[in-house]
Length: 293
Ligand SMILES: [Mg+2]
Image (cartoon, rainbow, N blue to C red; front, side):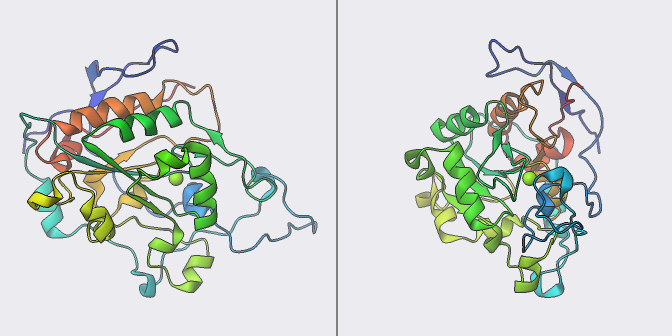
């Protein structure tokens, strides 16, 4: 099957970071799905207790935290998902442009994607925002074709803290779903362990409130793989629907990060809106960006 190369982006300028147009092409298919790795901060974010370090003191920063190994979810939590044959078949077709922009459900991760928490235990409410994080959310919320859901594997109380930093109460009320660790179907043990979480989009698609948020729900339109984007710093989170993933470089607190990743994502969302089925497009033209060192 012919494969078009993915789009490569040019660095944005600090003076006018939003939006930026794609300028060139790169090669390569969608990123592979790696195995479980202990390098992902988001996968590991919620230790069950504030365990003392070896010297008996409470860890005061990320660098001093002794972290458990990430474990796979147990069968009771659904195990490790794979894409269904029907999903892969639908995504295997060539992308087809739409004559009009179509609705998008944008599912946002928080930690590592929009912000970073440098000291989880000592200062759990202090977050460093990725450049343009608030502007990105506002732009999505103000777009009549976009609905925004937030889905983080952090505990609900921490999801609330992160949302409070990024969104006004009025804007938060426009988010169609704010889901935390309690929305992964984890067993109690897995919930309290450092368990790899999988964002099965079928959970969102079957949720009544999320379904009702489709701008054309009254006409029978639904959210599905053709119109849902999962934006996350971990490709593993999207294991069950890999061709709906926009995978960003993990944000670890560099407020001088270049290029402005989120301005590039906005532009990519605009491209997706003009597609009949975004899973076909993401498969052949995944979002790619190189962070300057
Ligand atoms: Mg994350």
